[in-house]
Length: 404
Image (cartoon, rainbow, N blue to C red; front, side, top):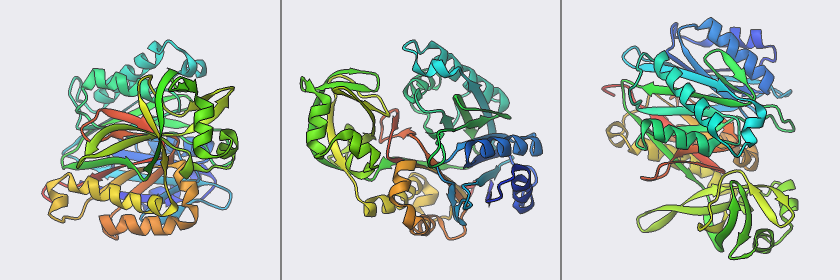
């Protein structure tokens, strides 16, 4: 197993891909994870890369304000970026499936089209890997925002809850709305792409937040999907607004992300609760719309984070992923890593991205290749829980070559 990362700030897609090809040492990668900004530039680059490496499984999504790798933060002054994480593993198997769906299907109460798209993408990915009907070691997922919970439920039905699903939703560039996913030579602003991984070496993973509980908000007593109407029988907006101490819409517009997250307990670690986080996105009369589902009967909490906790958590997540494997516990150097990092958290630590990079390299090794995508919602398994979708989260995969 061999892993490389290459990146380019060139704004013309053909030139950016040429630069990436010139920098890439491996001739025949088996898997390419591609990220970049803005969405149109990313899509064109990903399509050109698939043509340049027709035998590779190619997957990716648009990333908020560039990408971060062991080489540093990659984005031009005009907002252009391209990052490529390349893996060569002749003893493993890799495949990608992609399904686009109509924009209106993202808002349908009937989720059957999303479920079918997920099943089709999984089947295509397994066929592409020449492993039809088999259970992959893990799944790497990118989708347009809005239907992540449905996608995860469908994948659990198809492959079981023991297969970790790690990924993030596509994000637009700062100040824009356009976003894109890419898989198997096609790009779309609405859909999902997933890669099935059967690696020859071990892979550790970790997924969590950098926030702590501030206070209880109560029990969700009325909700529908991602919209909460009541907490303990009271208007949700009234309860939440009192807890944060300012109008919710104002706080959203001011991007006070470290003071806005809501947490739900999904398990315990050393007798301490472990939380999945969600963020508010809009106010509707007396209700609040979030970026992830909250169910009636769930107890939820106001969470709080700091710039310091967000800067340090990528290091903790990578260390946790390393410690999942015997190689990591013995101190072996990883072959490489893949990371998804919440775009809202990136905004909070934007002036300290080099410090974030250094902390990640301190765990992985100074020259170990990794790439970080900045996403609009993250997916992964928490503790022994099933795979979940959350906000303000970070997820990591750490790869070790066989015999490392």
